[in-house]
Amino acid sequence: MKLALEDRAIHAIQSDCLVIGFTEGGAMTPSARHIDAVSGGTIGRLLESRDIQTAIGKTQFLHGLPGLAASRVLVVGFGKQDKLDLPRFDRACLAAGRALRDHPLGSCHVCLHELEFGATEPGQRLRQAALAIHRANYLYTVTKPLKEDSPVPLAAATFQGGASLQSALDQAAGFALGYEKARMLGDLPPNICNPAYLAQEAAAIAGQFARVELEVLEEEAMAGLGMDALLGVSRGSANRARLIVLTYSGGPPDQRPVVLVGKGITFDSGGLSLKSGENMMQMKYDMCGAAGVLGAFVACARMQLALNLVCVVAAAENMPDGDAYRPGDVITSMSGKTIEVLNTDAEGRLVLCDALTYSERFRPDVIIDVATLTGACVIALGHHASGLISNDDRLAAELLAAGDSVVDRAWRLPLWEEYQTQLDSPFADMKNVGGMPAGVLTAGCFLSRFAEEQRWAHLDVAGSAWKWGSDEGATGRPVGLLTQFLVNRAG
Ligand code: BES
Ligand code: MN
Ligand code: ZN
Image 1 (cartoon, rainbow, N blue to C red):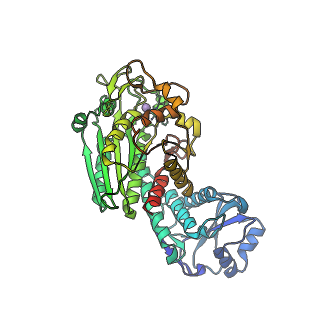
Image 2: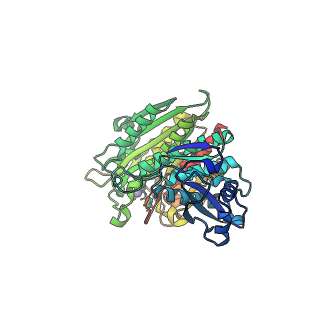
Image 3: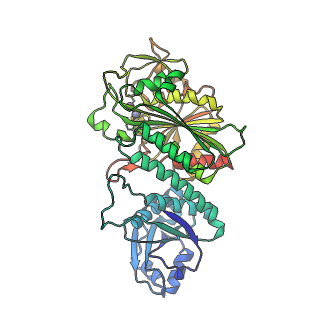
């Protein structure tokens, strides 16, 4: 979807649909006032009669308004003016975007960012609105093509405004590309999106953007490095594992990079600790951590941010087999630390621990891993927040603030040493499971042992990376949070 600015007078804009926002108790925006004026007070009358509904997320198409070159107007409710904040703004913009996607329209012209609230700047509102419209326009079509008579997603959208908003719109386009990449990868079925496919995808990214290099390690190379934790997970699968390393050099050569590490389990059956049918159904999404870091990487490369970035994806499939790793096995990770595998379904931390150790060679400034790591995180935080665990208060604060400012929020959870004892094992340096209490935290504790010398953070996106239920699908999170974090660092 193409995004562009357009600053002609609103009545003269030839579009299939003007998109205007309203709040309850707030003043009309400039565009709403303009439409009201050229249409002989129609907008004011419709508000008066409550035919324009201002409840948050309400959308209605108005036809035949006099004085407009555009053929219709989509009016969008943003709820009570004094309650309007960035998350509510985002929610209503997403609703507008869905209405636009599902309607047979060729073009639209959006004015939603004219709504003022809190301490927001026009550029920030424009960026959020454009990103929301773009995200809502997404439709998965790889294995289910559009029917001939169904409305096609929008090919382009324009936004009210001039040159002063261009950089905000360019950012929206960068973020949007990242979200789209992550969602597409997340939604692909596991018989298509396997470790080799993720490596191919990385090769395509390396071919597409400047300053990007790719290295892919096959199982032999990983064995040479002693990555027996990662390889143990992969052993039961006919699909061979890959360690995918993308490097983006946008900063000075001596500047330490940000390293993003993604869990890329392209299907998690649980292995010999087999999941139930119910719990296995959505496990194609178990590579959404990888999809998220690849999405943020694409966004960064597209915006050509001034920093160095490394993206490490641990790609493998967790399957049961005669050769699969077993509960009770003791394996030695690349770090030399030994792990008693008590549950082969706690595989994410095993592939990540070797990827974290491998990442030390890049001398990271900070290292952030992203993973659909625990069902316990979904119990704790539901679908609205990603779980954040970190050994560095400043890094944690930067990540939380980045998420807040683009409505891709995380919530910090404790990394207290008291929880570490749940991983004690009589047979190895640690167990790979910490029992029922605080499963999201003991998973974080496990990972922290492989990043002791690093400024490290972990994002558990088990609840946020995809939606369940009627509008099931990958969300692209935490591409927004990560990309904003990178934008802030690049300055
Ligand atoms: N990929 C799952 C975590 C998961 C479960 C994400 C449900 C989203 C929804 C992970 O590999 C896993 O199976 N974790 C186990 C860990 C347990 C065995 C300690 C879990 O959460 O049950
Ligand atoms: Mn698992
Ligand atoms: Zn998993």
